[in-house]
Image 1 (cartoon, rainbow, N blue to C red):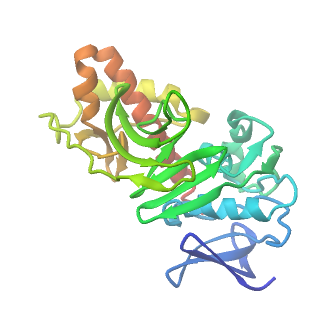
Image 2 (image 1 turned 90 degrees about the horizontal axis):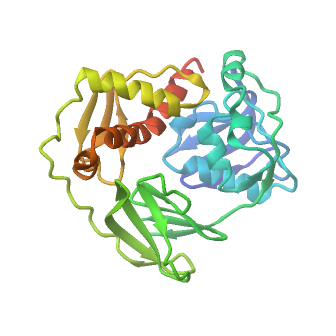
Length: 306
């Protein structure tokens, strides 16, 4: 199969090449250079969900757009065939497919598959259900059963995300507008933007307020790091080993936490909002904020031998 597929700023070169991890593969380019590769498929009639050799090399949000293009072209339920059935991949797939099993089932054999570079199918069916992507100058909106996700200036807001900081919130009476909001400590921190029923940006985006706490820039003490590592390990899947070598309070805008080369940073708004309610509540909120970024960092390290 020859040709090129352009989606979300990346190009899939459909000529088949040999890849040491994937076997038959397509090269993926960005801004005119090869950045990674994916399992070769028939784009006119996809038969499986391909593996991507280095998903972290893709530009932000391009992976989801690529999988949505796959769902748009697919004529049947598909299965993932590759070594990395991660929690992140499962959640991205749910934006464009309906799964026949839960996340735990999909990720159950991740460590074995990663160690053996497995290429056989994971026995979970994904039925195509692509979303419609509505672009705006600050990002895009994904519409399926209403607005399900919005990306504004690189930050993703989820409709079903009460546990997350960046949320899509609809009026209690239904209808519109849908608001993109930032929440810390189960309280509103900022309303960033609003969208109408068609996904058009009708208000915002507005600048985020700055955190003003005097803890910004200060590291967590060793005793707190030790306690947090235990709490985070209970939230990280697959019994992956958790280490928190260094965590610092910071102003992270719309993010609760992020990884750094030598550790992690956590938004100081959590301290401002939750410290008055006691250390137990603060510690659990910190663990919930850190768990997703710790998981992503561990999975990335797991994939380094590629």
